[in-house]
Amino acid sequence: MSCTYAALILHDSGASITPEAMNAVIKAETLGIAAGGVEDVLDAIAAGLFDVETPSPSLAALWRRAAAAAPTPGVAGTTRGAVQRSSGRVLALAGALLCGPLRISAASKGPRLSDASAVRLRGRSIEELHEEAARRSVVAAAVGTRVEDVHADDGEGGEGELLQQEARRALLSAAPWAGSAEDRSAANDCIRKWIEATGAKVHVADGFESVSDDFERKVLGAALMDLLPAVATSLRSIIAEAKGGLLGAGPSCSRRALATVLSFHWLLERVHFTSLRDRFGLCLPPILQALDKGGADASVRLAGLASLHLLLDRAMAAEVQRFVPPLQHCFATLYPLFLQDDLLAQITVAPFCAGCSLFMLKAYTSGSIWRQEVLDKFLLFGSVHCRSHSLAFRLFLELGLLPLLEREALVLAPRLKLVMELLLQAAESPDARVVLLAWRSLVLLLCGSLRPRAGRYMADLLLRLALGYLTFVASLPPPGLDLDAKGDAHGDSDGAAGCPDAFVSPVVAAMTAAEWRHAVRLRPALRQALASGVGLLAVREIGDVAITSKDRLEEMLMDLDTLLSPAVGSSQRADTKPTQGARAHQLAPALGAFAKFARGAATAAAVQAAGAWPE
Image (cartoon, rainbow, N blue to C red; front, top):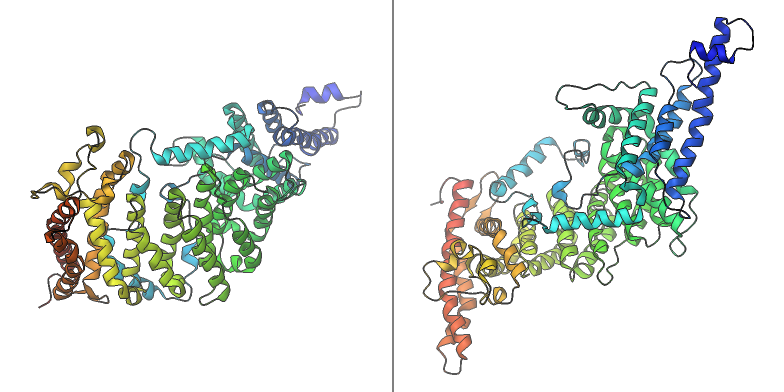
């Protein structure tokens, strides 16, 4: 009941209305709503989220009642602590309802991911960081490190869109409360009321189109600076009431675990990394408890690992280092399990690899033997478990290996041989997306601090460059493929022009229509990556000046010709099968086209690095 003058008259027992009586009634009304009424409403909302005995009811009316129970800022009788506790519980319950889609690809992470990179230089000076960036400038224009084109859709129903739809479908199936637009709108209004009750002002700032836009980016993020402890405490109480574990997680337990990690994901997407200073220990235990009590539920693992990745992203390295044992145990026991036709388990590789790479970068100092143990298990997971699943392996390369190479390649130095073997095998894949990610990783190795050791694999790299060029650049489409699948591949293929005997790679001949479409779509990016690889192989030294040697390139091309000449020469033997002779006869001009391509790429690299060929 509102505390108006009319309400005072209706509640007056005949005594005169004095200022003291008015204040007493106002205090009683306010405390009755803030302390008692809102808790009952929030209990009803929690029951609607976690009760599995009956279908989830519409929560919009309950959210409106909770919004109406928000106290007016500055009214006597309300304490700041009580308002913050109630606001924290409102945010904790609303986050499970408002959590948006979990983004699968690193290309769609958005600008809010901070990684707090400005506060962790790991003992290196600004000058050293600038020198390292300068060494990478040799290939910055040609390749870069972004992988958006790997996940670009082939029009309607592309792979990236299908992955997002699968993740959303699985989460909506496990969290039926999150599908109502009316409930979400009412929860948003309730959050605004309670944030205003804490004293924050909701206004539209310059550059924002609406109150909602400004509220998400400004007011809520600022309010979480004070409310995050209350929210974390409320979420901890939610997961503490869940009864279950790896072998005995019931439906109610799984729903509580899922609601906890979804709420954390929603909050961590909006919180600034400075809000987590000295609060990492408040947020980490509920997430780990939810992952433990969720058991083998794939939806809990997906949302929980995504929340853990965001938490590690926002956290300071010094705070992550205080919680190494539980985090190390978490990443050692929560590897995604690939069961038959389980697409969600492969999607879970994305947050797992992204979080594990951040953990290795932040949790350990250089040379730590514990980090070596984590790295060994991580590489084993990628090279053995993910290798037989194309989607999982691509996510491992993109979100696990590439970030380590970009940020701190020396982490991989103790296991460089295993990393090179993994990437060289990936460069032989018939999947153009895997080949592109492999060559971008190899390019980062060749232009980084591990180049002297990676240079020992020059012959292997040149052979994979030739195979990649012949398969994805020079080859014509698979024979017998319909015209719709071929598209305009003839005009984009180096093998289509100037070759009396059209060259078709044996790998391409075995491709399906879908695989060939990926190869055609990624052909420009693959051509750039291969050109950058050739240019780096021809570089003798990367320092203040990159020296590109024409003689070195010619020597490597001669060695390659010697290696492949038996296959070409075998076409002249009488006992050679006709099909083998035809393929060998087609290979010679294709190798000539690769040599021309390599010389052009090396010349472009020399002009970019030093301005001209050295005399």
